[in-house]
Amino acid sequence: MKKILFYCDTVFGVGGVQRVLAEVAKRLSEEYEVTILTTDDIRQTHRYGYDRSSVRFVSLTYAPVSIWRRLRQKCCSFVFKYLLPKNEWTCSMYARSFFLLPYQEELVEKINDGNYNVAIGVHAYCSLHLAIVRFRLNVQRTAAWMHNSYEALFEKKHPYLPRLKSFFCNRMVDIERTIVLSRKDQQRYMKELGLETRVIYNPLTMEVKECTQPGNKSFLSVGRFSKNHKGFDLLIEAFALFAKRNVQWNLVIVGEGPEEALYRSLIAKHGLKDRVRIDSFTDDVHSYYLRAGVYVLASRWEGMPLVLMEALAHGLPVIASNLPVVEELLGESRAAMLFENGNIAELADRMFDMAASADLAERGRAAVDCAREFSMDKVIEEWKQKIIR
Image (cartoon, rainbow, N blue to C red; front, side, top):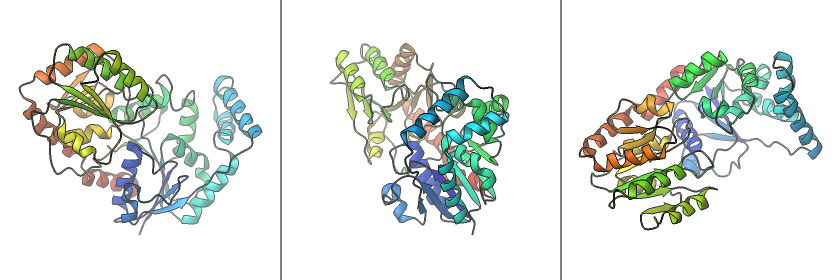
């Protein structure tokens, strides 16, 4: 039996990455020996149903470093990013600062002790860790699983890898397989980084047995309240414009995070307390989909939004910003209306158009058809063909 390792820092937190990892790992564990190497507290296996699967966990603890070593690390990072030319030698030197030598030793020991066939880095940082120590790993194959878009990694206002495009490109050539979430990203990786990648869409992680009924006059949006990401501020501003033209529909936002106070202040500013509701995250998000009429994705950027697939599977028509991954997945579907990313007035217009639409039931059926493209069976077979076999 092949032995598969996923290396991921945060496994049990709330987020789409954690949910996708859990479902993919559990499903693969039905056929392979699957282990997750993580810095999380591995006693939390009740989260995401791991305790009902054969997925194994190995704990990884990176000991704190001294303040002087951390300061030296920051200085090295500044010099590399802003002053040095980017070549093989400088990238190799910076790798020791990006991923400290004691941490490299611990990761290599943990992986080599397991005699794995495939080691998969989850997220860009964990994938870079694998790339940095690749020549010391006794595994047949390594893979990098990118959960963020190319734009999110390198181009948005506060990218995940600021000024590290050359370093990423230099190190990642040592990884045998790189997984991206869209064909658009695949094209950009090749054109701008010279890296070959394989596209595997995220699966629908929720079992849906019931769809919403036409006639619900409520917009729904779900996600973490993180800065400049999910666009809930844009959505509230757009709903304020929409509410001047429509008195029947309401808006429900489900989530938690640091920007909640901002969203509540916007609701109060526009006098929308009776029409916009914010609820905390729940394990019963299924019930929210069933009570909604239309789902709205106002994100400024996304890798591949799970909530979009969940909404489609529940038969919800979708209004979404015209992100590359959204255009790729829904651009031709009757289930969706797209608007220009960040354009509040156009989002309000799309909300009015959808609320006034006479064919929401037909759009809902198209949504269900679209969701079938992301079935777990189909995605797992791609994992087997493109990564494991």
